[in-house]
Image (cartoon, rainbow, N blue to C red; front, side, top):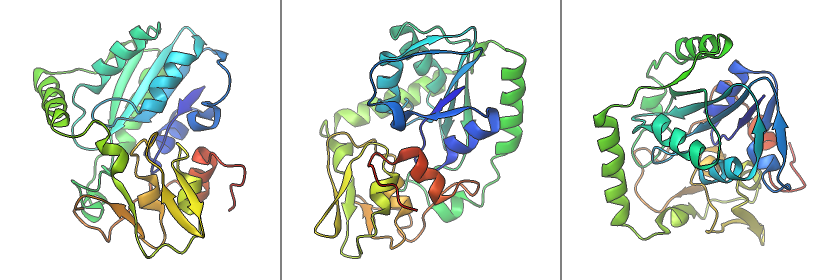
Length: 259
């Protein structure tokens, strides 16, 4: 059993590679606290600022897990900043004792820093990494991915940079432009329900935005962008193995999912 969170499909693809029984965290996060029991229980999600998304943190704190083997696979695109170690610390605070935590290098979809056209040209050996991780999990390997002092320094550098920004800076990163045609795709791919339709146009609602950029990458008109410069505003990304329908099924928080 894997619980997953995905913005542009990387973590969903990884989850599908590792297990057959998948549960989307956005689809159950609003339910009453539950207890899950399985032979193996995994969490697959990206890291933002080297840490798991806030919704995943909430999920880990709220739910109860009974398993002999709890594991996490954390997807990242450039530097993980000691993500495995940070995730292990989070688990301990939640009363969870992980058997295995690893990191998985994939396309980096962070538009302020990376050109998606260039990212997709890179061979990050994703399948080779996944095969190794699956072998680890199948053999019940135990351990946390290696974290160096350089990794820890990268995270500290990030935290220092964050102190120079308003506390809610990431809540105001999304901008809906004049090109919006009201198709509603952004609403259906948003895992936090942070976009709604008003008078036939998409409106971003700050407060609980995960800054996963699913709305930006999925807009067919490229009408949704950022309030900061992008490396390549014309380039967008979705994992090649994941369809738009897959993202909608994973993330849609409204009653009507559409196609």
